[in-house]
Image 1 (spheres, rainbow, N blue to C red):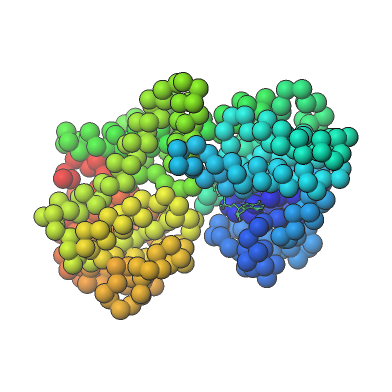
Image 2: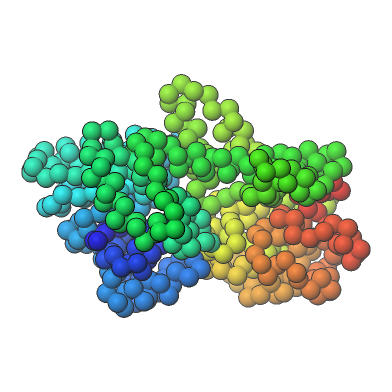
Length: 454
Ligand code: NAD
């Protein structure tokens, strides 16, 4: 089948790669000419495990093409995927300008029937808006052209995006009332058949429910994180260890062990903006989203947690301190630093006069791009020095802080850490280590909700 994907970011590029891998022909359209040019050269602009070889091999096989020409894209696919960003507007609502721009573009160029697929995370009612934009444009030139707009939200996790798309838990397809649901179901069953073999994962519903399903999923996950962070903060004050509590509650099947890790806050391009956007949707219809507001407030406070520990440890004077930071990305196996807790920490430390020596296995380039003016690497005096290894980040630092649970941070050489730091103190935003063991090794150790912290 022929598929066009608008927006070649984390979602668009991964979807394009897996659809081409199973044999579909995919045309990728992006307005970012540099991105398209570098993809044509075989350079993959984002880090995602397994993505680069998949894109390169399908590009070589001619199943995936890259263009900045919207017209070429619209003419190519029977399916037109919209996978552009939906960043938060000033009031927290999802900004639909990129989605609606693509809708205009499709309407402007289409010459044959199209199935327009909303992959972006969009508020309830957006499929209707996209349909309105297309219908009103077509009315000005060729009202005989037919189209459907279908909500098909993306559930991939960054860091596991390729495997999530290859083996999805579910494929939600939402059809607008009045559209031919049977015909649409048939087309989607054919498109996604390669991903739907061992059991039926396709869940058909109405478009509004599909749009809300995506927000509900992310908000539920964000709620789990904030709930655990709330428990961690209580544990700390009452002298309990949240890691014991986590084991204790996870063993209840109704709760389960997934996604109940306390930490220094959730980040990324989805949870923060989706919690805000659903809250905004609720407020617009006159419903007070108390739980969502609490989830967001707890998370914002949690992102300050490590900085607060540091300030207390250093008697409220971080001026001139050098802090080693392991982990910049918002979670492991990605280079994405959008809304990452590391950013809140670094910005707070700089405001208090401290400098940062940072290391991340994948996000160094992204960090350099975001904070170019802070980092004149290697002169030793700049607010941010990006170091080549996790060991180099430790040299002559006053403390080590861990913000991301990358695998290779989990069993470090503690003697080397001790020898490199000016004083043996670790602030662990991901509870990677055992507090007692750390104390036995001679470290001052601050975890999240471990009972002994400040
Ligand atoms: P992204 O910022 O990585 O990529 C968006 C791309 O769209 C960019 O390359 C941009 O240049 C391009 N673009 C903007 N306007 C365009 C236009 N008119 N025509 C063609 N291309 C255009 O975004 P992302 O992280 O892939 O997210 C895309 C959507 O998917 C968002 O709504 C997001 O909430 C949702 N989503 C993201 C994830 C995730 O983990 N990143 C997971 C599920 C859903």
